[in-house]
Image (tube, rainbow, N blue to C red):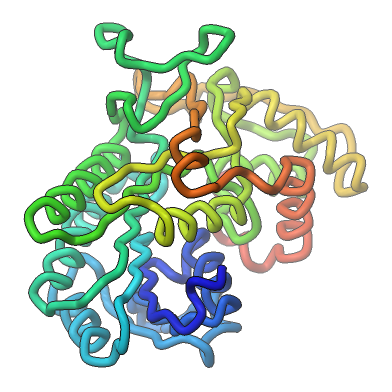
Length: 351
């Protein structure tokens, strides 16, 4: 987008799945890109290593207020224009949030607070602050609040900005908290925040522990794909459409507003797996791979979300965004990535 040419931007979580794609897009657009990534003893950056000469790197930890404040202060001194902040740094795996709830809250809630407070304290002049929320915030429909929901022509619930939030995991709760913190800082200090609730990203570089990645990586290595619940539906959206959504919201979104967006057609996990396996077989990547449901991989108790479909009409009306990449293209590109980059995901599988 031409609006980012020469613009100073900050991306947290820049070496992650979505963060790396946004960073790449911003570099291509000619932005002055600053990235905040978690410091490690090795300093390894697998996803944006090819961009190191084109970005300014801050290493720290969102949960550590000093490192966040140092980075924001340095950026405030260096920036010659209003900064756009893309806040994607997070512990973003639903399943992991049950095993690492304290870390999830430290990064997702305390980390967001540290960033917002540092922006205020250091006087960083920002054009927009894009907080990456999640469709998981909506949870399952609360029947007692049924009158507040939107339904499609078939009578099936779809979620939009007016839908109640009903988080069903520590991850989702942490994102709701971050969402409200951003809106608090908008009202209290006038920070021009937008909240983006993206529906079910997939694509190259995503961890193989997410559903699309685990389907593909299992199929590449064995003749059976073992999954959790197959009936829940998700609105799978290709990562490059996710990137476009963040950029559109940052440029054209209204401060203080929420924008929900996704492909616009939810599909059951079982049907999604069958779709992926068919395309992979047609492409010669595997043959006769079967799918099996394993209750041991279900979410705890009754916390699985049964339907997650999106009504993105507000996003389309106010920013002009709509999905550009169809699922055949997206899945083929994703299969190709995993097939050609086994060294990047083999050590991260959970099957």
